[in-house]
Length: 306
Ligand SMILES: O=P(O)(O)OC[C@H]1O[C@H](O)[C@H](O)[C@@H](O)[C@@H]1O
Image: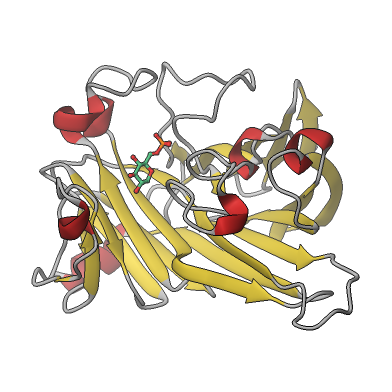
C-alpha cells in the first residue's frame, strides 16, 4: 500500500523504494528515506533525537516541524499569547486525502483548523493544509495558508504570519557546507545582546559551516541552495520562502536541550526555509503557498563540481 495510516502516523511508500512518515501531531515528517542514482538503497535523510517525544506531549526534536504563525518568540501583537514557534507544530492535524499515487509521486494532504484551545490564544480565522509529496529521490512539502475571514470591513481583515519548515537534515555537522549564502545579510541569534542580534551582518564565506554554535537568519536568500558533505548532500528548492535559518547548537547550547540526545548536534544541521523576517500578508479569502523540494544529491554531480 503506497499510503497507510497507523498509530497517528501516515506512511508513504514510493514504488521505487523511497518512503516517508508523517505524524499527525504537528504534521511533522519524522522520516524520509531515499537513495541516490549510484546508491539506490534508501537511507534516512532526517535526524530525530532518540530522546524526542513522539507521543504528542511536546514538539518533536527532529524531522520537519511546521512553524506557523510565528517564528521564535512572538513579536506580532496578534501572536503575543503564543509560545516559541507558534502552534502548528504542537496541534494534531487531520488526514484529508491522498492527492496523488503514481510513479511521479505519492502525495497526501493534512489540514489544521482552529480549535477551542487555539482560539483561546489566537483568534484569527485561518485554514492550513500541508501537502507532502514523495518521489524517488525527492520530498516536497507545501504549506497552504488561507485567510478564512469573511469580514468585508476596511481596512481588510488581513492575516499576517510567519511560516517555516524546520528541517533537521541528517549530516555530519563537522563537515557540512551550505551554499550559496555568500554576500547575503543575516541576523546572528547567538549574539548575547538584543543590539547585536538586531544588527545585520554580511556573510563572507563561500560555503557556510556550522562547526561552532550557529543560529543565523539569512534575509532574502536565493530560491535554491544545497548542503554538501563528503559522500552526500541535499538540494533545497523553495517557492515563497524568502529567508533561510541555519541552526546547529553544538555542545554549547545543545547540552542544555532536554530532548537532545547525547552529541546529537554532531548528526544534523537545521536548514530552515521560511518567511520569518517581517510577515507574509493575505487578504480575506486568499491563500498563500510556501513550498520546498528536498532532493538527494547524486554523488556523480558532486564529483563534477570538485
Ligand atoms: O527548541 P525549539 O523551540 O525547537 O527551537 C530550536 C531552534 O529553532 C530555530 O532554529 C531557531 O533559530 C533557534 O533559535 C531555536 O533554538
